[in-house]
Image 1: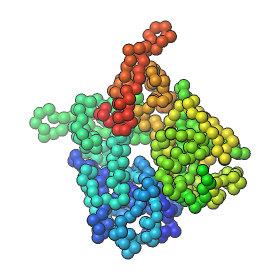
Image 2 (image 1 turned 90 degrees about the vertical axis):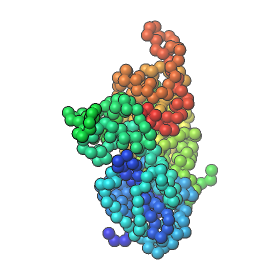
Image 3 (image 1 turned 45 degrees about the vertical axis):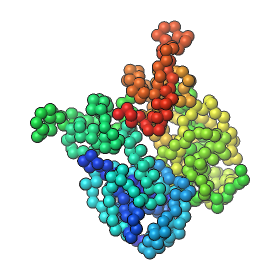
Length: 247
Length: 247
């Protein structure tokens, strides 16, 4: 892709992507380091004049961290007029190696927040020109982030926690066949708290997105738990229209 | 308020407000007519340089339709590069009476969608300079809207329908004391479908936001239904953190 300049982007708007990674009862978020600083940032960028927000988000993930085919969901807009005052070392870095003139980074910009949830052990990320390090960091260990990125992460987390009450999750995060305790662990990890086993099972069954299989988890001595798989059709329907059919 | 000009606003971004009105089993949306045209629009506008999105939304509601103290929630962003091609009669009207130079309306702009739900019989609206008519129109009767405003309304409706699965509604929409059938009617109106009475009651009780009173609806011959009121504390808690405590 050829370089784009200030003239090619919409001024005063940016997009920031909160990529949550779940694996084995840990919830993490992806951060990029700005080379030569101790500052970390969400993958973000500007919007080219002929692109939608969704396209801009996909471009940013591809160009900045090498991720493709990630479904990003818009969750909030961050518009405090004071939010976009970059640290001097970031502005220095942009002046040296930035794709845009530094003036873009010195203006006020409103950021549109997008988020995604994936199994971070299944993806490989690369680094862009601004960064020489990246990390998946536990959500309670986020620090040294630029601007209001910590607030953006917290708001995305709050949205994710609400989201699991009205739309299904788990596909691509759990093995193809999984146990109810594994499903419960996923929810507990996202919610950051322990749940009641019976309540959870009742609620999950009411969502009608699981097929209970006639198989049990092998290698467990006694009380081996039954295996489940997602009911593809109902899962897709619930993704599209939420759990409202459970009313 | 003094007039503001193109220089005072952020270019290429607008805000559109979807105001849903509920009353007696009807769900409506507020639309403004552009004077001298047969075109209808959501109350919308631009963002002054020193304002947040939330402040811009409040300013727009106050200045365009005279509404104050309405809680607006951001729900999506509309960014199709082709979305902002105004009809010639709108551009003519703007040229004649607009607060901004018409060039603002001829550029591409990305719209940030905000929505609110209120009892429309409890509010009085006024008209701004662009409009000589307004209406609360049933959501299935929306037509002759400008740009992608119909899509914005549909997306807001979808969000509202999901929202009632994870956050409480009803306060300011129902009388202070209400029956379970009245609560159910509110949900049925928003969801646009009939619900099972027992399921509804079980789910609503699980949310733990209602106090059952030791009173029944008067004037009903037999099987008089019990009255309920909102449990203020739990309602506020659920507004803030969703129904996740029901996990």
